[in-house]
Length: 341
Image (cartoon, rainbow, N blue to C red; front, side):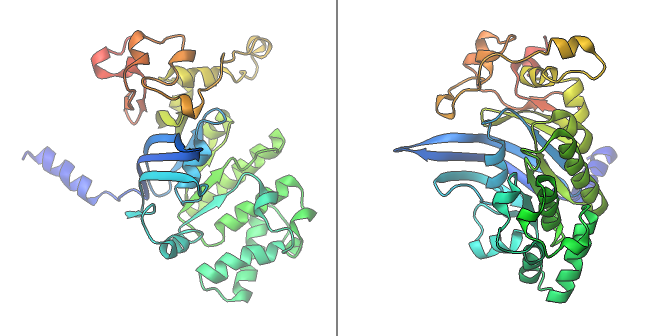
């Protein structure tokens, strides 16, 4: 073994293991007497303090993938693969152990705050409860931290005894962020946390969440349709289509120099600020994503892709290397293809 090889081996041995490692995650929902795939072979890792944005059209499997990480999917779902959180497989661990991981290890900011919050309990009660149950905190200490958390997300602590219906939509989402931070988790999963909010409030909530996690070095998986916000708030971006990740890499590189035709179509769909031409003639994407029951062999995007080759409809698409820290499920980046465009 050369000195250089030995040094590389030592560095690999001393490197911190990933906080979260997802291997071949498969999720299928029962439909009649069969199971229809919603997530098909998702793989990614998340290091401590890292932020991953997940983008894609509605129905591509983003929320199903995210909720399955903590086994929050519908009971009719069949899940396989591995979700290693600090080395522990959450898909096979006991329910008692999983309850201990939820809130204290990983928490969720759901997309519908009014549905997630209990309308007959005060905000104080709902933020205090997980701290008392999971952190074994004294009620007085938990109430003090709840007031501090509300202040930190821009809600006056004097409103801590208010009920959810007394807040606006944006304020309720801020309460959800405060609840997610209550037990000081290592991971937050934000599942489209700004749905149904106006554009200005969306930006405020996502920036608020990004600030809080940067301060606490919390890892985040953030799902939203706004690619520009993901590029601004997340280190890496995963683009999903038909239940699979089709491109993964540093956020700004993925958006500015996309390798997969689907990613290019998504990035072109957003008008460029200050460019009247892009505003007056926005570029869309013809057609619709395939139904989960229609997913067959080959690239699922081939039917909508203007760059598709004959092999795209028959060959299985894997995430091939597409540059430093990048990968794409497109035959054009496959090493034996030569990278021709």
